[in-house]
Picture 1 (cartoon, rainbow, N blue to C red):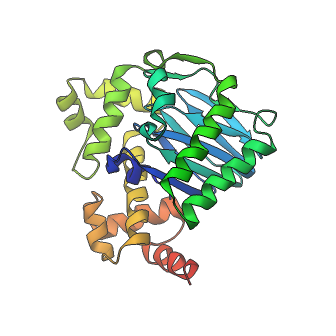
Picture 2: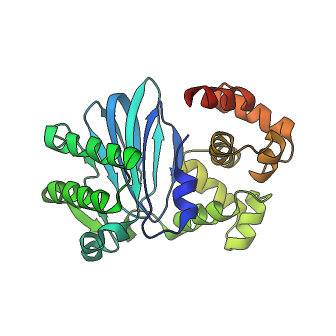
Length: 268
């Protein structure tokens, strides 16, 4: 599970979350938040603004607001991820508006023991005390330590407006009965152009991309609510529980019930 929807829908200028994931995979997406991923163990393929890199243990990547980014796990990985509103560190990002990183991938020689310890201090603070002033201070410290390595460029050159508008549209309408035809009509493009963006720019076929987003949302609801599986299926945009169960198992290798039971056992 990936905290994409929680961050994207929050609208909170003080939003911050920290999670540790095993074998993280998530298709390309964007949101108005900063995202930092650090590889605790193993390796993971990270794509940011159409550039892919395999990150290994003790390496990291940083996404600026509205960078299009995704994760692909082919072996084993354990990753630490922070997602936070740039407003928390406003004085840092106010001077870097409409910018992104030329070098978003941080190798081992940059992520030294000092930076690594700050990452884990930040995660521990969020999970144990969640003091907003301590979190803000640690974020400023991390950004300050990394700033000398940052090479900035204009973010408008990273992706076409069509791709960004397409992903933003899906973020809002993933629960609806959307199709290539309906998106094309609302955005003023041909469905063949939309299809080509998915296959050439995003790297997924349209239906596969929508299903992955919906399953991510369903995982969050299965973990954090007592809603019935039928209700969750419909709320996430699936036409029936049967279709939901089939796609859920295809993508996670578990049934929704098995996934929920596993999460419940982890809390005991």
